[in-house]
Length: 237
Image 1: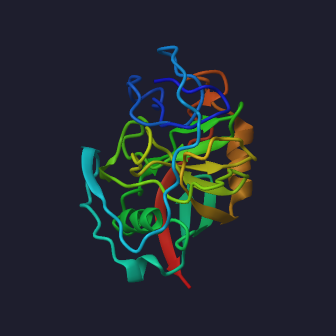
Image 2 (image 1 turned 180 degrees about the vertical axis):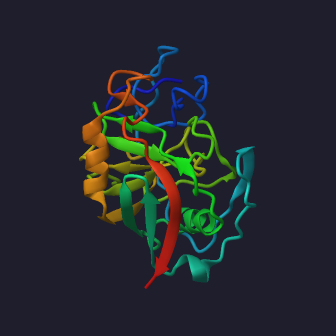
């Protein structure tokens, strides 16, 4: 499946040039893929609304498997901040626990189980859309945590600079991959926004300014400045 430029994101095929061969996409952000010519439906999907419960569905792949979270509504409602300490600097975001409790609970579960540690951000886009995609422990763009979770917070969703949102392969296929928006970007409301950057937008802009290698398409590839995630710290208020 391909996605028309400047309309919708999916998880694409992305790999570090010197370590893996290109693989078929499992989930990506937008831009036209190098195979196929069909254009995805860009109409807005039915929006999911926050609920008191959440279902995490077993799914493949299960890379760096840490188990499947059991939703706890009381814990999910508690605000928190996540700080990603990367090789290019720290990035902190406020989790939108009131708007995307299922997603923020999952991210917290994975972070507290060191899922993202020693992984890297595998995709940077610098044309049409402006995002840095992370969260795949395999670094290929096709990895996942062993479960999927539903879409949330899509009604009226927009993607200004500083947004943190989920990458996916279609409705309700969220896993571990997410993206930072480093410059105002227009996308269809199909990608769960679950965080707002409070510090480190300058780090993202520095990474973006250095460019990428165009290995997927012009303006879409592996970042020139490697972004290695050393650890993710969760701080509660």
